[in-house]
Length: 379
Image 1 (spheres, rainbow, N blue to C red):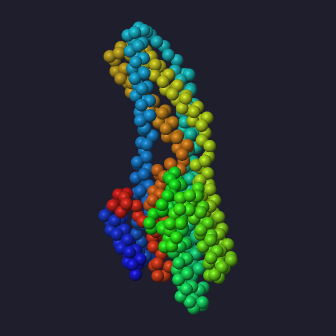
Image 2 (cartoon, rainbow, N blue to C red; image 1 turned 90 degrees about the horizontal axis):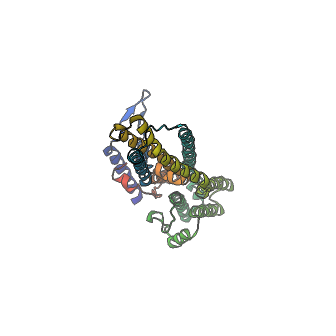
Image 3 (cartoon, helix red, strand yellow; image 1 turned 60 degrees about the vertical axis):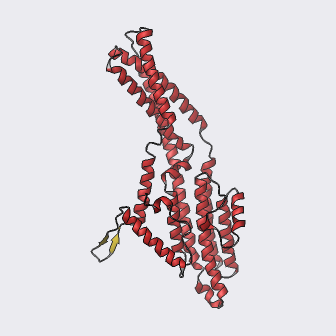
């Protein structure tokens, strides 16, 4: 009754949202008579991912980076005034070769940190996609437990048990992904959302999830127990349970691989080495820039003074910005959260799970709602 109506309302609202947000909903007829249109879900995810990417364009410009850039600029200006008016140094001839060589090597090291961190973030993003894909596979395999296997029992109890199994399985699959995304964000579940609380025993389940160190693993254990109940009731064969258990093992492997990225020892020596020599090189370059401008232009009133300050600012901004961008190597999962629309992925996954499971009466809802910003049309 209410669930199908609610789902229809959600789909109608989703279509209206896509039209109002400017998404292409035009239907095209191909030569063979097939009618197609651009995938609205793909457009929505692409727009969301693009928005997150744009938001992260200048994330490397932190107060620390700007502070170093301003301080290096002040050092250059101070050196210029010091050499010109206090020390009265004239005809300075500076050899830039040592600084150039050290700067090139330092730049290569900083770029290598960024590449290494990006590879780890890409690996973590692949794990998120693999985790969701395995959940979809488990939901599809659950169709083996259907009314055609239990109708011969002739009891309403069996039909209700099968319906309850579908509901609980999809709920637990959603709960596992929800706990997994919290782990990506560095959060711990205390109280699950109301949509994922079971019809019975919700308080006990919430307490268990808030106590255990790996809530996702605990949810996978409950899924295994749920499958075992169906096997003992002869609603599913041993071979089918074995196939689904194999998928759960894959799920746990993906979880462990992602979880391991949080505990991978950070290359503290490389980070400390890079930061130390970036500081030394940039601030030692400040007086060198002042000497160069004095040698080329001489007078303080010359435009060379302004060019020297600008060069110092952007040089410091470049090197300290490279170091800041390379910090993704320290927290690759944080990079994944910044670049992937995790909450949108959760809603799409929840909708897929409710559709993939054999649910002729539409009794399995979409457990994870659409994020508020998407409801309001903000992509």
